Length: 269
Image (cartoon, rainbow, N blue to C red; front, top):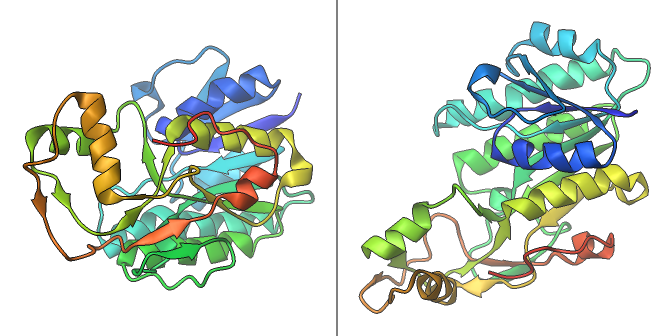
């Protein structure tokens, strides 16, 4: 039975775990506070700090066939992102070089590594010129883990939505959301988990970089209108601005992801 380590055990890992169990994987989840996480039958949870090379070394001694890395920052400062993403990847790169056989690695990143602001179409070959601290640190972490001897796939996810991610819905409901002229992109959390599982089931499809997004980039006004319709409210009273905003404006192409044969469960909002 192949064995997978879920390094970081938040929402995406918890959605991925049952899919991997179903596919016949032995699943180990590692995080700082396993006692605070929901119990999923068949998943072994262990306490480990991704910032600790000692903890990571202890984990890797268990000889995993694959590692799925889903990390989150403890705070949203430049240093917070550096500690959450770059430091663990440096430790991992160092440790993976010491293994006789390196496991496959799937690393969850973000389309925040792209800085385009004029509605351009963006894919895996587009220039990465992040204009935020978080984007810079995410890109640095990608480069570090891609420098390991493992077969690595970096999944650059667009705005993740789904159960438990209610902030935007609440803002639309409260009338506090602001409509900008930006193009926006999103992916359902179940599809992030689904694509991780699909790549582990189909190693022949595993390439270095994938843009993970749904089939339909939307202008922010269109996206908010759809969410408002689901909520039974109107966007007529929302404030509008001509500023694109900190996340830029781009249209993401998911053609490479779809070419693997993966079928989106939520192809559009």
